[in-house]
Amino acid sequence: MPRASTSRHQTNPRFSSAIATRGFREQAKGLKPHQQKQLQRLYQLRLPPDRLVTVEFAQRLGSLTQELEGRPISVYLNRRGQVIRVGVGSPFETQIPAWELPRQGAERLSGIRCITTQMGEGGPGQKALTAMALQRLDALITLSVSKSGGHRRRGGAATGFVHRAYLAHLLPEGERRWQVSEPLPLGILAEQDLQELVAELEDGFRRQLTARQVDLDQDRAILVGLQESGQSYEDLMDGLAELSRLVESAGGQVLQALWQRREGPNSATVIGSGKVQELALLVQDLGANLVVFDRELTPSQVRTLEEALGVRVVDRSEVILDIFAQRARTRAGKLQVELAQLQYLLPRLAGRGRTMSRLGGGIGTRGPGETQLEMERRAIQRRIGKLRQEVEELRRHRQRLRQRREGSQIPVVALVGYTNAGKSTLLNALTHAQVYVADQLFATLDPTTRRLELPGQQAVLLTDTVGFLTELPEQLVEAFQATLEEVTEADALLHVVDLSHPNWEGHIEAVETLLDEMPLATGPRQLVFNKIDRLDPEWVEDVRLLYPKALFVSAANGQNLDQLRHTLAQFAAAFAPRPCGGRQFGDP
Image (cartoon, rainbow, N blue to C red; front, side, top):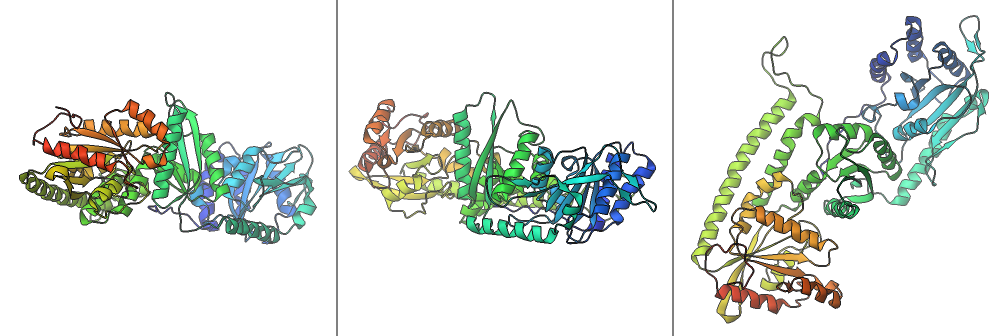
């Protein structure tokens, strides 16, 4: 699947301090100047690399918390003991955004620990532990600051502000995500070895990753669905099942599906903020590197979600476009796929980077040069124009081929249907065409036409076409117009349905709706139920009562194909090259 590069900064203390300082200014509103200065001075401190915390550092934070009238302070340090971020607030309120965290994997922690303060007794709350998991912190140390007492010695050293602390860290195995210690005397916690703790935890994560037998080059996806008011649970599950097939067809592995019931989508993240946090934890737990939504996302939604989750986020349309890109084998197919992808990408360029446009008036905007974003946009627009010309030439070429076929007075019958209904298998079974077939979505993109000899010295030209799908991206419909004309220009249509699919009735409705929307798709249609070899014969007979004019076949083993040939021969014998208004085969 397409890999959108996500910029992540390494744990550079100078860089992180600058970022933290900007956020700190917002949090420090209302603080006195000397309080702000004391917080800024924390960046100058350094802890021993092998210590979780020192008594002196903890007491200093406790003293500052009392000065701030009990407001918590959260300090983030790297494994070299350098302070890289200071926040006024809880770990949840001051957590580092995903795009600022160092690169990490399912087998590693982030290399950052958080030391936070809170007034009174009690360990870290659920939100603080969630923030620890989202950032994959090495550890979370919570200092319990006494509500009274404590003093500064001569020279400024603080003492007596903190007596007990809690140590929390992630767990690599088991049902629990994390472990929180009992309240520990500060002196005992200060003696604990950070490097030993981290090495033990990361060894556990590596063992867990090995046990999963993870292919690091494969997309490991979590699916996300939204059940809006008016949508049934069955429709939601059908949509997620189809999305799962799409991801697998694109070469990804589906780990789990998550969904939420809402009146409507959240404008920023589709799902609610609480569900986003749950999703982020699930990404951490399962080692996912991709999140796929069951609906089209706006560029700003993708950007917001990627910042919150720390992994790539794509929508259903992007998965379909990726499958088409993988399946395209001919020059015509590759042209149409590239056109669709560029049309999809163009309005989303602004979401792919943080470069701001320089167009407009004012100092610094004049003179030569454009931003990278504008150059990419112009290059894509030029490429789209060229591709449209080539696709138009392809359309004219196929139109000339159809005119030649029309001159032969042999009727053209197009095989249409939902993707993976077995159209290519049926073409092979009837004509020995040896078209590529596979049990996957969109195995065939390019139309293939073969002559089929029929009883009574009749013949038809059978054309295999690209499969249909519910809510097919409009970019693909436009780009594949030349291919879809094989359907609109056909003399008749064989609508192939996978009767073994749980949602076969929904597939019929989706295809018929798409056909009715196509200009000139007025040829007679014959419904053909395929894959009956997988079904109970008695149940097939029940369906036959509902669709008495339909044919029931198995392209895989040839069952009832003679009936299909006979029906095609009847059509060929009565063929007259004129519009037929959506009639059934055999209608007068």
